[in-house]
Length: 116
Image: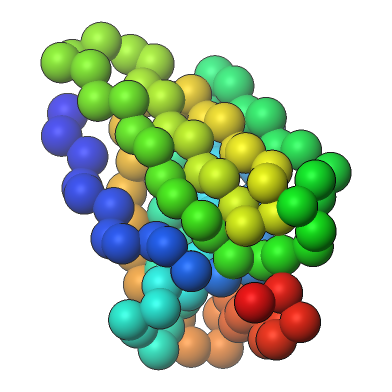
């Protein structure tokens, strides 16, 4: 199964993380810089999720970079999201999808000017 390409996420705001244990899915709610709407990246077939919040570089809600391990067709796939706080989210999954969050869905981001 081909998963969609992630948009440019440098400086995107990560506002919410939802782990659906029974379903084995993970939803990340992000707002990329170039858009005025949040997106939801859903990871299906989740086998591992590591989400430290130690902030070795200081508090930040912004993404620094995303590293995707693109294997041929082997699973699990791996995605690492380095936050501007220095924390790295590490996700192992089978596939992902991207949707635009509906207005008023509760996926509104917060503004944190002190983090920039």
